[in-house]
Amino acid sequence: MIGKGASISHTKASMEYGWNNEKDANVVLKNNLIGNNPSEITKEFEMIQSLNNNCNKNTLSFVLSPTIEDGKNLLNKDFNKIANDFIKEMELGDRQAIAFVHNDKEHRHIHLYVNRINFNGIAYNDSYIGKKCHKSAHNVAIKNNLRTVKDIQNSNKLATKEIRSEIRDIHLQVLTLKRPQNFEEYINQMKKQGVTVNPIINKSNQLQGFRYLKDGYNFKGSEVHRSMSINKIAIEINSNSEIGLRTYPENKNNNEKKYQENKPEYNETNFTYSSGIISALFKYENDEGIIFNKKRKKRNKNIKR
Image 1: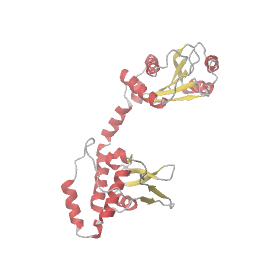
Image 2: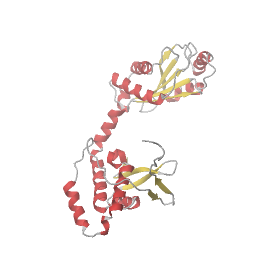
Image 3: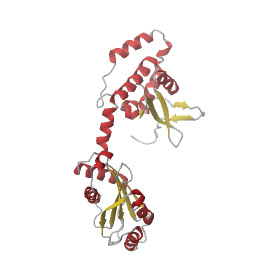
Image 4: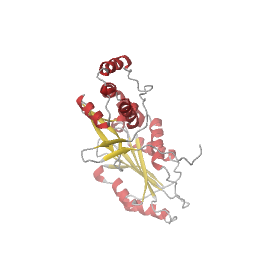
């Protein structure tokens, strides 16, 4: 089960969405409320919210999504328990709250709205609410025998272990045998081996990492293996560039022998692949001519260490 949460100011619009008949919505929880439609519920919320005029985002909105398989087996009373357990985990206390289940799609989920202002006019502290929500949803899932995010991730890892192992093996062959001198060579060599490598560019137009595509699968480098982060790849490429082994033809056979002798077993937990010298400014230029830099950190010599 996944949980998402945020503080919002558009209470009425959210109530109307939650109580949308087109979503085949069912009310599964109603705490300290008597209204029978979105307008009435909103007015009840606003009555308590008037006790605190300093808080603009005065409604808490949560979405709780069990897996499709779990959702098929849940009844309204089960969704009620999930919502109540979540309220307790979030330590929301005695507040106005209403929860709806949307049944219009195969993926059934809960929309939970809680008044951020309690009956004493005090606003709930929404600092790090996303992390709190995630942790609370995890605990509620365990308590109700539902699959957690970690369960799903582990299942996906197991199902894709073979293809990820194949991509990682090609990655190691390219670094060990082809010894690319820069990212462009690395990408081209990977493509020759049947793996498309797409750069991930952040908002600052800097190279942040790579995505690997093969046989219809699409992974971030860290999803293939933790050794395939941009930092570790950069270290290896920089090492290749400094050592310059590719200038000596006789090294080709030595590299092949070295790879076969030291080819590591695939191990999710204890395998690490990091060597070389961190000492360069790495550049990658894409088709548009934008250069993405991975900058070295500079020490302030005036600071005593």
